[in-house]
Length: 292
Ligand SMILES: [Zn+2]
Image 1 (cartoon, rainbow, N blue to C red):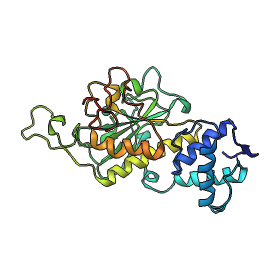
Image 2 (cartoon, rainbow, N blue to C red):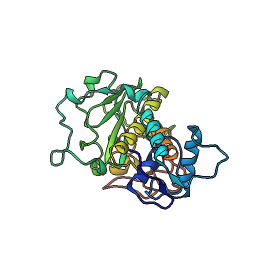
Image 3 (cartoon, helix red, strand yellow):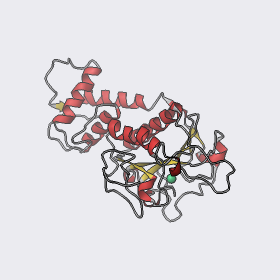
Image 4 (cartoon, protein in one colour):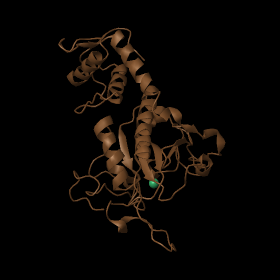
């Protein structure tokens, strides 16, 4: 979506938030104000750097004072290119192949504008690489240990994956069992009756990269439909029974990455929903004193 006439500094046109989301997705961070819908210096500076990268402006030129139709068209082209290539162009689409029994019965669908978050989970299992084995999992995306991305539900469907965060979030299930805190095997969930106790799994680079690409793809797709993903949460924040979900390794590899790279928020040190637990200091050193 591009503008027809230049948008000047200070504008609060609805297009501004779209341009900001595109800039963030393209790697031009807006650390102070994020996608706030106001065209200020931070956004114009990022927009200027983007134009330089496209050869539409010299690095020595003054900072642009407006977003022009040509500049916004260039943003659209760059943003559209993001949605192609990379592992998420190879989403294994299983949406038509199962009965969608994991969907909310009372409210099966939502508007794009209601999607504001991504929730990360570990399966605490090993479901494996065969897409059909995932059909009964009530969640939008599953990432296998080999890095396959399997989509089960539309983003606009409300799935029962994250308790009080269901309505606002898209869920990603990461296959494998992971310690609640890396290096502390006691924080790993042990099913009853195993002859040999489980050992925590690692997070293969292929799998971690597929999760990151999926978070990015979700944010881009929601933005392309007029909404905006602003948050990323561990399931733990919305359920006291999911203390180690998804665990420190996944959270530090993907949750913190999404905050630093995409400008998403985890809600802060005290954030919980329902009977959930705060993010512990062992997962994020900023949250001094938050217990596991
Ligand atoms: Zn979970």
